[in-house]
Image (cartoon, rainbow, N blue to C red; front, side, top):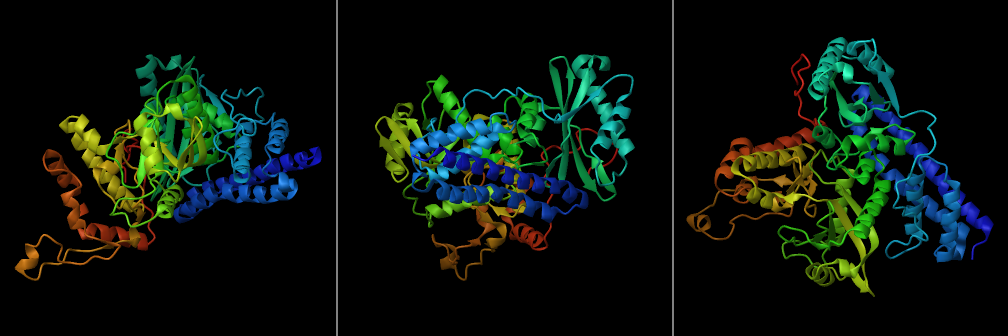
Length: 578
């Protein structure tokens, strides 16, 4: 058993390493404001990726130092039980306590290999943490709708952010914003006087080429969310849109988008502000959206185990055509799918397990541009075996025997990925009417093009590898053949040299591993009929080598594409959208 002094040193080390991580995390996050002001988009991309690797670096440091402190007891259960209790006391009064506890869990799982969740040594608190104390500085600023008009109030609001860039015509933008708010309030309440105040988060949400001001308009217990995206134009920055719809704001914070860089001292408070504005979103998704993806993993586990505690539904195979690389199962009442790598792949898959993991890592590190589902990676989870349907259990034990095994009444899963549940596009097209189906295939083509603009080639373009969100957006979620677009050699199919080649059932041309022939896409992307006709009307260029080579040239020139998570031009702000 480790003595009390060593326990104290170990607990303080974990706390101090977290604080060092968080200080550097916040320091990097602060850089986003300057990057946006200078329009240094490439720097922004590098910063976002670098920040993602920061957590792993500090956890590794904690692991090495703890082994020195705990010596032979670093995998001793009793030691970690005492260490958890001491650490809990150290962080009990901290407003960021849940995030610090998640860091403790990360270090624990690096050192103390544990099957399933052990509440004696891990922080798994199923009750929502209540913030008993007031923060040093509220995360929002309140503006009362008193004698001042909306234009004057919004002038104060914009000035409060102290932006280091010039607006094209701020007075004009503010007039349009005020008018949009008046229209929305009249629609909701009938009179502007019915509104009490506006609360605007002090921090700006930066991502890609956009900066977002987030807040709410309130009357009693009724809240209208408001998001203002700021975008640079040739003549200066402008307020590009005014978003009130919960659906629109949900898409801004979507799981298919990269994480925001938002400078806040109180991330827990920030999430508690955001949650009422997007009640359908889980806390785990919101934490991920602001860059706390590792804490998001802990929160998602809490949400999963809470669901299992209060429900009786079983894990079942996920709907859709079974893949050759992954086994996918889900809970009917939980909005997540669980993906395990098969022991053996289909005959056309000439790669191994590590390649699949690397593809998921690529997606994690890359800009997801609203078209790639975020995935969380877990190791050594444990579930009650009786919570699995017979079909699901059989498939897992037969097809994933290297990853799953039964231990008594438990099923132990050594490795899996989670993703948000989507309706596979091929199933969706069978469920909806023709007009909705046409909208879906148009967006399917848009998804492929936007991924290309982000230097991503999905590899397998079959409908079954794309899913549809509740907002009707098409998302790619099957990553085992995904790669960078600039790694592909797009070719034109050479003409046959003689009639024998023309009428042969076999290809008359050879292809290297990275050769792709866009002409072949037409045979499988969309089935023949009205949907194919619509797809061709909007996206026939996908079958032409020129489109793909042009995209590659754009990336070679270092251009960064525009990806905005909202429909531009919904609110007329007095200028044409460029």
